[in-house]
Image 1: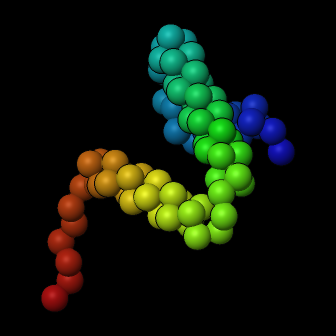
Image 2: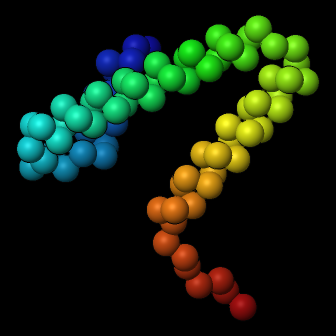
Amino acid sequence: MTIAENWDLFDKRVIDPSAPQIQRNEMRMAFYAGIHTMLCLQFELAALDNLQALAVLNSLHREGERFMALFTVPTAQPN
């Protein structure tokens, strides 16, 4: 599996087929930048001991969760 293959899946599943090419280009740039950032973080984590790496992973996870919560539409909870 390659980054390009994952981009193609993302493109097909997420981007509206009528989106302008500039939007598709910007989204592709952001997609690759995100993957590159995560790979760099993984290499940095590999240099840490297990407890330090776990603490960093937990922090990154919480940060991601906070970001995703900005886009979550509240739903009614069943009684």
